[in-house]
Length: 264
Image (cartoon, rainbow, N blue to C red):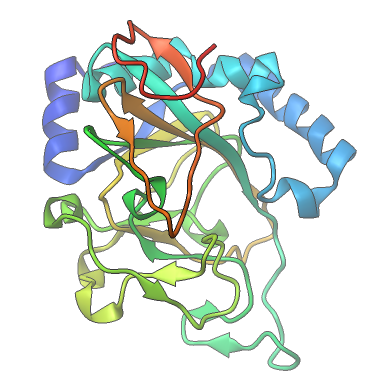
């Protein structure tokens, strides 16, 4: 990694994200892509698009991605030496092409209604813990570009704290409860796209406002999303939305708190 710890910390604190960080060697990338292709053949694309959740506890190759030394070098620079892998999921936007102006899918400005996209949101809305930050990783198995729905961020938006989210009426939103930040609270004129080459990763703070558009290309966009927290973080109880963290793993340092349910 070319950047030192102080540079990583300073940029992450200022902007709330880092992007285009090289992680996987060509050989490691090919091995991961081959292994994922086996899961596609086994489960089918409809399932692998979003349902490969916390399989780091089932497959050694997935766990190896979450513990990759170059990846953890960045994560520990931001969160400190004692880190828990909280949760992970593969997310794939498969190509669907540009639809015609008929049926249920119609052109709507820049976006196409009904096609999978991710609305503007903050990760901390969903996670249900306190006492420390969350860091989200997108480790690219495919090139992640504007045309296939790359990550968009609003730099520095993590300094605004947790923003209100409301129910969206837009079809295709991949967020679990179809939420989004109201448009009047967004500064989308400041948004930038974070393109990645396969084998690179981006990381962002749990309060950073981010989104991604539909994949209108003929190329898949697949990535491994991993959430990390420092060991000082702890779950909070919300009767309206009970949460559990059954797949936590201590991936760096020591855990003197034991706030989470299980660790490998």
